[in-house]
Length: 116
Length: 109
Image 1 (cartoon, rainbow over the protein chains, first blue to last red):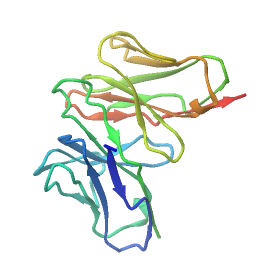
Image 2 (image 1 turned 30 degrees about the vertical axis):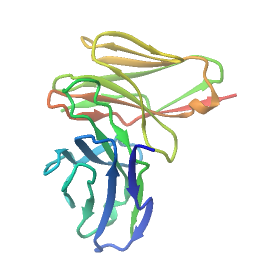
Image 3 (image 1 turned 180 degrees about the horizontal axis):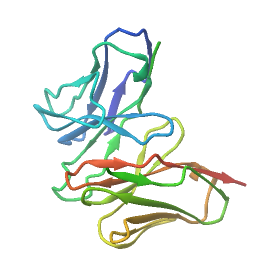
């Protein structure tokens, strides 16, 4: 079944630990995104990538890094986790906006992260 | 700054009609999206408006007025499964999506 797979679905980790959230898509979309979703706030963009080999910073990039070695994979790394990074993280992909069609985002099921 | 406003919560009755409003102030406009998100799940795409007017998809319709910076999502013949959050998002001049905080819709029997 085509779509986006995120792992892990849930994780509890101690502050200061390094953590990588994995994201893989099989729709051959060029654009991929990482969002965090917190209660009462809209989805906030952390990092994005419009094509393999390039990445860009979103609204809340501090404390996070990403890489895009190929079209399918877009991992998000927390180098040294802090409690304020407790959130639900969503990976998404789309066709490149402005290249035709709506460019709607397709989301993974989310990764619930708790930093203690 | 860029801003999307939508009501925090709405309540409606099964079988009725509900309208969820969204107003926006963004740097440019390249389309408006509505997504549905059930509790504990991922957002799923509902509709896309880039021109003024009404787009209808079964029980759901979405309206856009670019001059007023306004959209609404209309849900007809409400079902219990429509209980969810509805997210409004606008694509700005840089093709970045600006998201509202979402409207939690509660359906009562």
